[in-house]
Length: 132
Image (cartoon, rainbow, N blue to C red):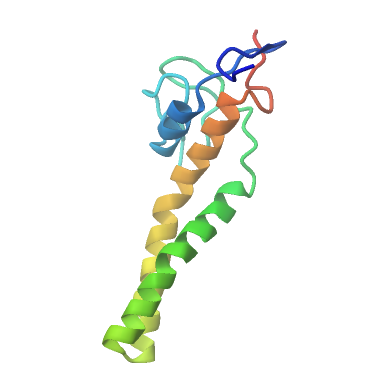
């Protein structure tokens, strides 16, 4: 049975790809219009546009682990190229890499949290599938 046509006690599956993309853009996974976050990482209780409840999410440490994974994989080639091609002083290299890692982490963390919340919404996890 395909995922698009699967029905269970909570309803049919929602399309995961658009929900993940909307979450990555920090928008509501349901409508894609309303902001998902009240502050930098605090998810709103509900969408101000479509009133979809978002308080059910359980992102926990997943976004932080994903951020570390992505930043590490992106910065490793930068470290290699920087060291082999330019041979900067250790303090200069450490400063450049520290600023790069912190900036990339601060950029990615809320986006990856939105992506995780979008997956949970699409898969009806943690109460997202309950109908009122």
